[in-house]
Image 1 (spheres, rainbow, N blue to C red):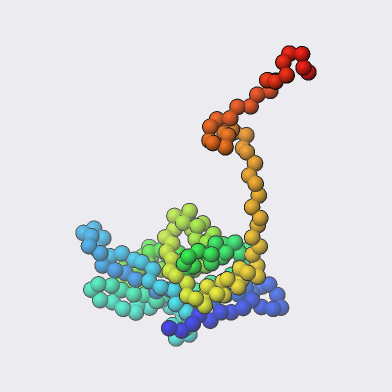
Image 2 (cartoon, rainbow, N blue to C red):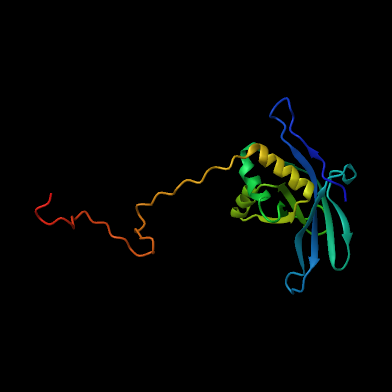
Length: 195
């Protein structure tokens, strides 16, 4: 398998961000279900090659599965999302996230197929898409992409120091054992003669 071709940011300005070009492989698999005999899943994210062209194409079709190649996705790294990349690269298994949708009408094949919409390495992007109820799947990122992402994070992300959280006034006070705490302005020591 070919390595991913990493493109650095342009030195002369901030208009070009570092990026990697990828292609997405979607897979339709047969399932044992009377109402829905097929299911679409993300199969892989692979390095884009010129020979892939620019249009999706069928790679494999038999009675058990179909595989479609969707070329030409650019995964850019944005300075403003350095924390999202940090959250990805510090997990046990850093990954690519892919948002995909089923075609509303069959355009690429006889039946509607799953079409990737975008690819990212940002934990925040994936979370926003999931919150928007999009279909988001992930595949592990290869070592060369993880190393590139780690270098970007090392150069551009500053981990903020954790601040002590102040008690919130609407929450009941508790002592260190978890029991309700009481606050009183009443003087308890010194007797009535002591001011």
